[in-house]
Image 1 (tube, chains in turn cyan, blue):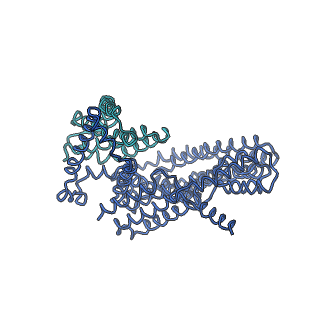
Image 2 (image 1 turned 180 degrees about the vertical axis):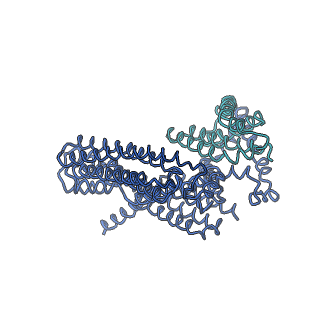
Image 3 (image 1 turned 135 degrees about the vertical axis):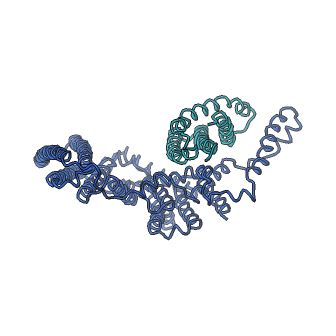
Length: 124
Length: 467
């Protein structure tokens, strides 16, 4: 499993989604600077979420006979549904504030795409 | 063709929902979704179950327009997921339909991204149009151009003036992003995917229970003795409880709301614990080979008696709730008690059937979820706020106006009529008038996407007044 590569790609994806949604509200030079700096907290969040919630599933279930693809196919649906539920709860709890919406949409899409990248790594 | 349908649908999606409250838009969305699903999955709509769910989806779309209650909106969503799940696999149980429906709607795109084993999922289009290349070709230069324009703006006043003259405010980026969300949803549902593991397991498992390999007469005899003793004692206990409860109901003539409330809620708590334990115990003893043990008749009879006695307990609680309602009127909690009692009663009947016809646990789960779905459908057809208010102001011995005023606007016109015909305190009079005025203003401020049946009624009333 190539975790660093996945984390790197996921960080870029998360940054793009988060700031595209936020820039629809307000575009300014100040935000552009913050957008670049936000790479650090986004990287930390993405790394933690991937290592804590996705990697253990592959580490625990991975065997020589079972590919990443097979694990993803079996467990991704449940993960996606639970993650969607949690993100939806987050959006509702935050009373649909744009920052919160962009954060939770980013979390859902990034984690789902991260699964796809892991699944495609060494498909048997 | 499919891409054109998805893009068109996503534009309609944005037009319907962007910055709008729920109303006519959800009903139109339901019809649009159904058309898209029929066009893209024509073969699946030959199945009876799918056709029924499609019709139910249309019915809930109409209910949303006519009733406009939170429950009707929730039901519409539940039926939407059921329909999508049914298109995925028509023969699966309803709870698997829900799982497949939710999964398809939220993650169908990602599923197809890594699931390219299937022939139909092969991205043949990629050979003709390289989407990734086009996104890179347009996206990357666009991002850099924007960044450099923002940088150059501060370096040159002439350049800044020229750039400032460009007015792109007519482009609503949030509307475009909303269309992307619509595109995501429609591209997900147009090709339903399934949670393979659960769907396969559900299709392979029947409803009947079969004799296990480890059939030991000695072990079963001991288990039967334990079960019989336990059931007998529990039956004696519940009979004693029921007798005392009947005496309490027939002798006490309580007119105090608090006492009645305590009685009903304590009864409900006892009922919840009693029914859950009853079902768990019955399921434990009748989980396997004891069903096929020839000397299990006494245990079965005791289990049946216990189920019947629990049903009597349900009826007694319903009676208490009835006394409570006739004195103090309906509230959501009191309606909820009736619905809970109905579900409990059905749960007991299905447990009875499970033991009688030697069915497995999955049978119980399948039947109960199906019934819960049907009850949700039925409940969504009722405009609860209106009917609660109607009953309370016409039949209840005492009316809690404060509660009725706090309900949704669905009862505003009814309260206004009540206000006009009766002499109320000035505070309540003003609150009801304010509620009605706000409701009328809200109706007039609605965009066409938010229209409900109330708008039609209001416009008819206005026409009549003008004549």
